[in-house]
Image (cartoon, rainbow, N blue to C red; front, side):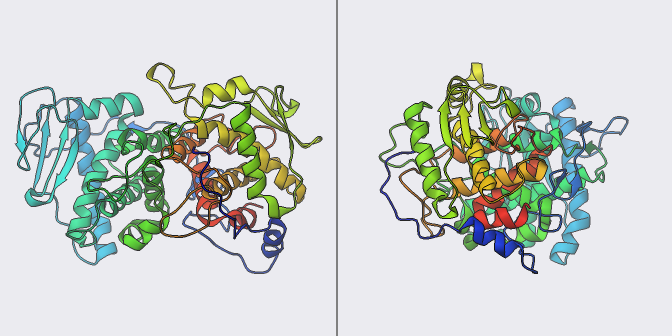
Length: 482
C-alpha cells in the first residue's frame, strides 16, 4: 500500500442509508459479475454449487487416457497431464458447438519435456531449463515441463493445479479455434479468456462430469484459486506489457467468471471489458516501500482515517480504536469488534506478523500489509453495519463484510481508464489485491467473518463477495447481502 499520494476529493460515496432504502423497494438490483442465488452470493455455495469437502484430484479406479504424447516418459506427471488434456478436450467437444456454433477440432500434437534433462525443440524454441507449459498455434501443439513446473504445482497446490494449467493451455486453443483470440490483440485479453475457459471447465469437474478428476467445492477449489499465485506475473508488472498474464486477483476474477457464467462470458472478453476492471499496474515512482508498509500504530491510524473518509457519508459514528486486547466474542483474533462499546481492538503483534512481506520460511504467518489492513477494515465496517441496524451475526453478515472490505479496496485504486475516484491519500499498490485474495482464502480470516469471528465456509464465495464490493461499490453490498 502506498501513502502520500495526491489528495483527491471523493465525488461518489453512496450513503448506506440510501442504499438500504433502495434495497427495500420492489425491484431486485443485480450488479456486477458474481453468480448469485437470488440477489445474494450464497455463503454455502461456489457459484450455486453446494460447498462440499472431500477428495480433489485423480479419480481412483479409472484407467489412464491412451493418447499420443511426444517424448513422454509414462511417469506420474505425464499421466496426470495426459488425463487432464483428455478430459478438457472432451468438455470442449461438447461445449464448443453450443458456444460457438461449430465443432471442436482436437489438438494435432501434444509433447512433454524435462526442464532438467535433454533439450528438445518445440515451437522453434529450446526447452532446456525452461519450466513452463504452452500452446503453440503455428504447430497446434500443447507442451508441458514434467520435470520442474508440474511437480512444483502438484507438491505445493495439489494435482488439480496441474489440471488448471493444462486447461488454461487448451483454453488458448479454444480461443484461436473460435476466433475470439485475434491476431495482434493484447496478450492480457487472451490470457484472461484462457483463465475464464479454465473456470468453465472446472465447473464441469465440480459437477462430477469429468472422467478422470474430481474437485471439492470447499478446500479443493480454494487450492486451485490459490495456485493462481504461483502463476501470476511478478508484482509491479503492467498488464499492457507483451506477455502479461495478470496478477492473481485478475486471474482469479476471470476464473470465477467462467466457473459462474460459463464459456459465453469468456468469449465476451475484449479490450473494453479488460480496461474497465484490470488491476495489474506498475509501482508508483514515489513508492519506495515496494508496496509493503510496516504495520504499526502510525500506519494503522492512517488506515483508520481513510476508512473514516470512505464511510463519511454513511453517517455512522466511527468506532474507537484500541491497540491491545480483544473483544470477548471473537477473542484471539488479530482484530475484533466490540459491538456494545463500538470499539475495534487490535492485536498489533499478530497484525504486524501478518503484514510482513512473506519469506519462504514463514509463508504460513506472513502475507503482506494489505492482509493485515484488510483485517482491520473488516472490523471497522461492522461498526457501519451496526449504525444502520444490520444483523452482525451469521454467514450473510460475513459476506457483507467481505463485500464492504472490497468496496474499501476499490476506493483506493487509481484507475487510468476512469471509474470511481480514489478517496483520501492512500492508494492500492501492486500486490495488495493478491494479498487480499490470499487472506480471503485463509480459513480463519476475519475479512469474511461475522462479529463473532465465524467465517463463511466457501472460500469461493468469500472471494466473490469481495469482488462485488470492489467492482460495484457499497450499495451492492447492502442490496445483495441482507
